[in-house]
Length: 154
Image 1 (cartoon, rainbow, N blue to C red):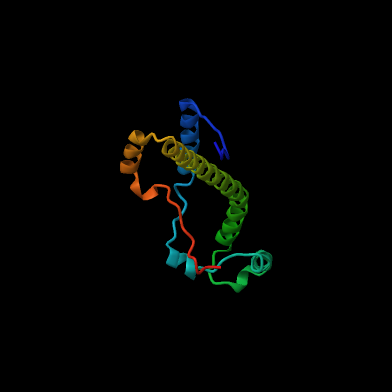
Image 2: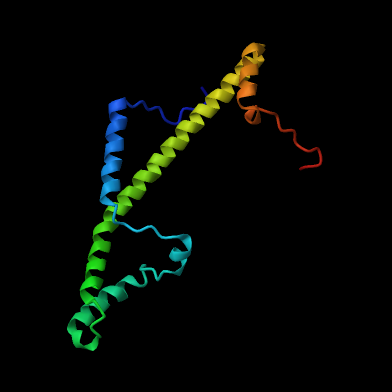
């Protein structure tokens, strides 16, 4: 074959282990929120520029607790920041895993499609048209075709 980006085989038990691990993460994250795109756009976001301000604010606010109304919950702000810190490392690891997972699934799909197209061309060149009819009927939109360049294009 012309392309083999990845070659993996998993046992049914390994796939069940993967599903169980995902289920554990889903259970852990049951209390997490889901924001709509509009909600995300409107949120104030803690980033590289605002994080030092936020951290310094907690230090200053601790020194002047009398300056705030009873409705201002400094303890909740500190818990939010501590949980933010605790989840940031695992989030980065999960993002890296999802990226590798996505790349691997994409590569496997590409390998399969390239092999199917290569096999199709071999059958076509060997004159084995009886098998090609079933392929054409299965997915006519993906039949390999030659794209001719326009004569006026440089």
